[in-house]
Length: 175
Image (cartoon, rainbow, N blue to C red; front, side, top):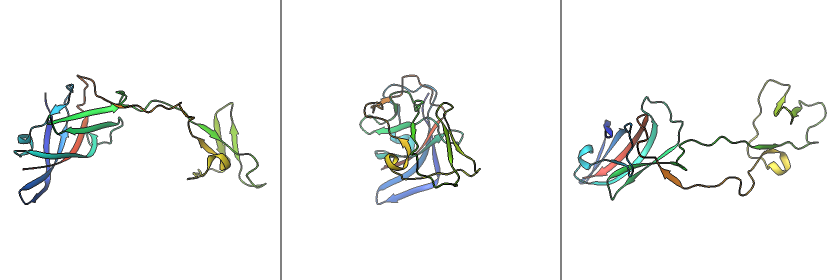
């Protein structure tokens, strides 16, 4: 199978002899190692000077829940799909939370925490979100310690991966 390429409305521009057009591209159900070929003729051009991914979602129009990175391989004329460590999904993880004692004034709405039950809450129904605090002095989410979260290089999607629900929008420039 191959890519399905659909021009986006009247989203065209001409700059001298160079043309740019936007397309929606949907992948098929068997991704090949090295990427999916996209010929200039598939997008009404003789030569593709560049291709930029400008949007990503699912073929049914809903936001993607699996993070893919799609790149254009200019040399081989292919769209390549990568995932974090080849998994496609963010691994389940937890965070520690620091609550600093002695910070609330007497008689105020107090925060109740139970380490045994892993619950943190308060009596008043309204939620509270505090942004940009120094967790060391004000409390909050404790960053992961060095070495506990490893950065990983992107890995190409495996040969045969079903990407038929992946839809991207690209800007193609060429002549």
